[in-house]
Length: 81
Image 1 (cartoon, rainbow, N blue to C red):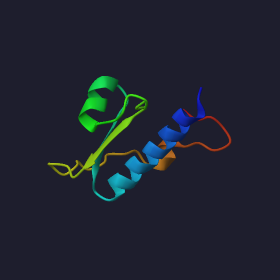
Image 2 (tube, helix red, strand yellow; image 1 turned 180 degrees about the vertical axis):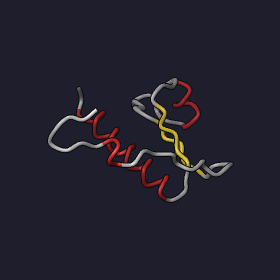
Image 3 (cartoon, helix red, strand yellow; image 1 turned 60 degrees about the horizontal axis):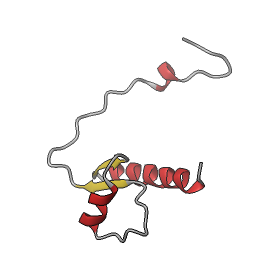
């Protein structure tokens, strides 16, 4: 696997987390038409678009998180069900 794909995934993931922390909405897009994206974004054919990341202010506020407590999902030094 080319290293750039993993590097890009890490960078996009960090950008997504930082954006959410700032109250922005994001959507990581991995399945798209290369030709359509090139045309819309005016990107020359010699470049490969690996991923797209939308970023902006949500039209509606996000819903509150309903997460389990850490002690329900983490185990130390032994497996727990």
